[in-house]
Length: 88
Image (tube, rainbow, N blue to C red; front, side, top):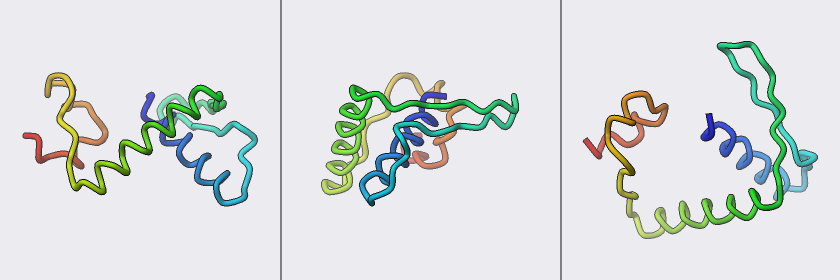
């Protein structure tokens, strides 16, 4: 799932910001299919990640939640639905 990839990239950025190195890659493990997937962080993804984090910081500082994107039917299978119950 793309959100897992971005979450892993956030962890890699946290590590590199604290003096650790992830070597530009991390791993995701699929508990359903029992597969280990290597995720490399490309430079253009690193720049997009900075944009995402700046947006999150701005939302926190302004105490403003982003609007729901797309139809709410997407929320049914979303792993984050319990964090944004206020949109229903």
